[in-house]
Image (cartoon, rainbow, N blue to C red; front, side, top):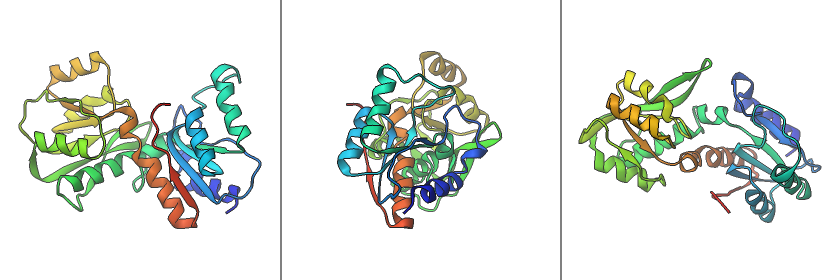
Length: 256
C-alpha cells in the first residue's frame, strides 16, 4: 500500500491529534520508498531495532517510544547515529506514545488487561477506563467476577511476560480488582487507591513512590517498563497486517 495511505490511516485510527503528549506522534522519519508491503513494530526506536527491521525487509518501523520528545534535538552523537541508521536503510519511523497506551482496542493497557484476565480464567471481563490525563483516559481497569489469590495473580503476570516485582502493601491474600497504567506510572498509585482497586499494575517506579504507596496501603505490581509496553505495538502491527494484507514482524528486543 502507499505510505501516505498507511500514515493517514494510523493518524486517524490512533487519533494522535487528540493527545497532549511530549512525544511527537506520527511520522518522525521519512524514507524514499513509497510502497509499504512489510512493517516492523518494536517498543523502542534504537539502532539495534532498526538493524533488525532492515534485516527483516521492513519499509517502516512503528514504535511506542520514538526519537523526538518535546523539543528538537541536534543530529549529533548517538542521535545522529540513530537517524543515519534509518536513512541508510530507507526505513521510515512512525511513533505513537500516549495514543497507543489509551487505544480501546489495541492499546498497551487494554491488551495487557484482557490477556491477564484470560490467564486468570476470566473471559469477556468488561474493562473500565482508568486515569485521566489532559482530558483523555489512558489506562484500563477491571473488577473481576470472583477474587483470585495474590499468588495466582503474581503467577499470571509472570506467565504473560511481566517482570516480577510485587509490593503487597495492603497485605491482602486475595484481590478482586486491578488497575493498569503501563510504563513509568507508579506516581499515580493514589488514583488506584481512590477508586478502590486492590492492586495497581505499572512498569516501574522509584523508591519514594513505593514508600508513599506503602504508607497509603496501596499494593503495586511493577512489571517492567519495557515488558508492560510490548502489547500495543504488537497488536497494532497484527491489526495492520489483517486489515491491509501487509507483512508484520514484531521485534522483541529490549537491549542490544
